[in-house]
Image (tube, rainbow, N blue to C red):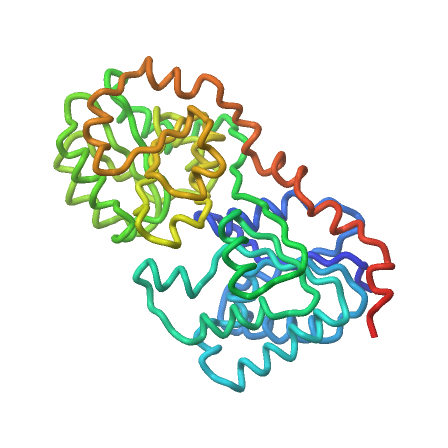
Length: 370
């Protein structure tokens, strides 16, 4: 028999991107709780994925008087957004999620808004993204945990949500010593006489990666740029410049150890894009927990959290070239001097969040269910 508290997630064996890193952090935080039943619906092939979809559908439809915490990433993984273009699928999903909302205490963790993300970032836009968001945000009783403050405010206003909403920002792992051959190989590339900058994240074109490559192509004497993450093979053509290095893609722990070797983390996102302004990028806390100050374009969500913190420096990307030319290691030390890396770890963020209270709700929560 399943326990009263149910946590539903998808955590693969290897985590190398921000969304799944968030899932794994929640999983690690909750996995040893005796009062929580954890369902990790990971799949390794399409057959298992279909099975997990029907299994989750069955559970959501027939659960009664449970406290259920589920990640949005679980829903979009097992109920593909493209299928929400079809009315029969929208009805199928809505029937399941509304039944669960009526009969249980449902909490949905929101990491992205697929429609706004696709619209602003040049991704494929379709009706399914809109229909999915309507289905999960028009529930009568559900509560939500958003990954940023402005994402919460925007969603509450757009969908007229009157239920309780939490904010659980993206955090980072606690730094651990890692002397693998990958880490040692990167150490050999670092010129200690130069300032080393790093961009860690997905490296597909359109995230202003081209812009920072252009900037660092002219900073040979004082700087080195290191990039790591998926979809970065195209960057190798820029490595003719001796101060630009694409390192490849790594699991989260190895990537974190590598990032800690550098001096400054970079977030070059286009601050004219609405979606970038309402997000709290995972890489911010990833850099901070690795002990790095960060240079970032002036994004509204990050200014909300860090406007009074010296270790996050806001500069328009058009000024980055001049800013880096005038930066030295003493200045970097001063920027990062008051950084408390533990403050931005998942353990600290989740311990202070409302997730603990959620899993201690009493049976009185359901006294008004008909």
